[in-house]
Image 1 (cartoon, helix red, strand yellow):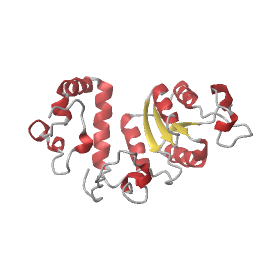
Image 2 (cartoon, rainbow, N blue to C red; image 1 turned 135 degrees about the horizontal axis):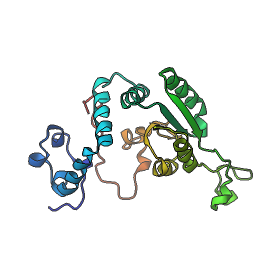
Image 3 (tube, helix red, strand yellow; image 1 turned 60 degrees about the horizontal axis):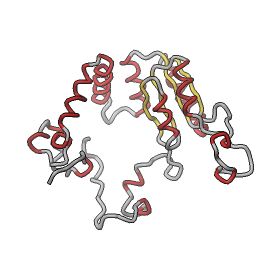
Image 4 (spheres, rainbow, N blue to C red; image 1 turned 180 degrees about the vertical axis):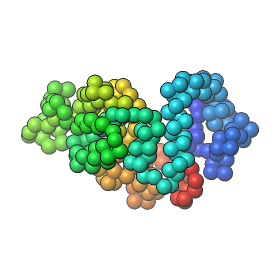
Length: 231
């Protein structure tokens, strides 16, 4: 069978040949090494860029040193130190101001300068982008537009070398990444229903959260392997 696109999500746990450098010999037909080795090679050449190489190297070192020991907050601190960053930006949802305050204190305690910008900065009314009153969360009053473009521009303008995203909405985070000038990472992925733990919808997709499936749900939904296996 000929495959047009990579489909790593279908790779059986017994294969995952890329982990051992055996994708060429053992990779399934939908493996990127089989579907599009040309793009893989072109991407590999991009690591010749000194900045890209440094990010890749320091990321791998932090991964190894903190594996199953460091929280993501600690990983952010250690990665930033290894990269030599001095000024870190926080792009947070207005609902995460208190968390951004704690993160700011942690980062400052490690010697970083910190800039933080909340999503509602600018106080732009939602009507300005064409929303009607009925399309607001709470109709009948003023609602400020989430403003991730300004978050990205402000963090860049004020010299942030690394950005930490905290709880931006779907789409708003996309706009932030589009306009961000420097490297960015995510500390909090917003999920109001699941306490900002969106992977729970996948872990429970065949039980409590089976509503996530569409009309073309497969007869036998895929099972998430048991936790604990080294990734």
